[in-house]
Length: 185
Image (cartoon, rainbow, N blue to C red; front, top):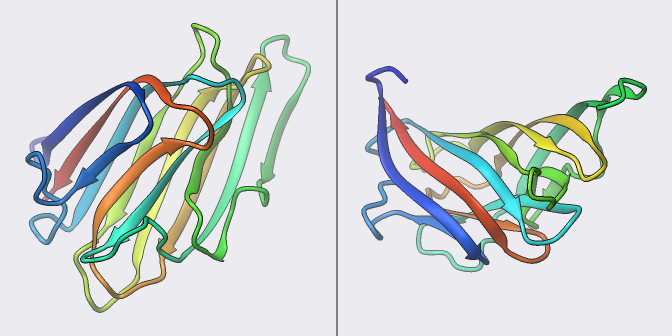
């Protein structure tokens, strides 16, 4: 990590229903201080098997984590036996003006050695002129012995500033894992 990245906040999940990063709360900065924010999530282990790791934003002064998202995803995977591979568009988890939580990676296993890790970039979230772009790349241990990389890109379709980001699973808790928030100069 070069000196242009500044660690803002680290949170460790332990049977957590959500992990929240809210500007001005618990030393979190998510405003015009930095033009780019990077969330690094490591060894996110779900309590349930086959669950999805999700995120959503909240506009400044808003509530409910239900901002409008347009996104696209593609996935590549390979199984342990070397017999199955793919590279494909994943239309099942993209959104077209949806307000649901956005899937970062899906069908994550909950065996002791299974988890997801990756990064989510958020660009200029304090802008009140433009939509807020994001992109993520993550790798997981699929519940059926696959290594799966998922690429995600999209935007919050609002000109309001985004000052809150929440992470969660689509079912159950985040059993364990760490999420770090960095500001990039």
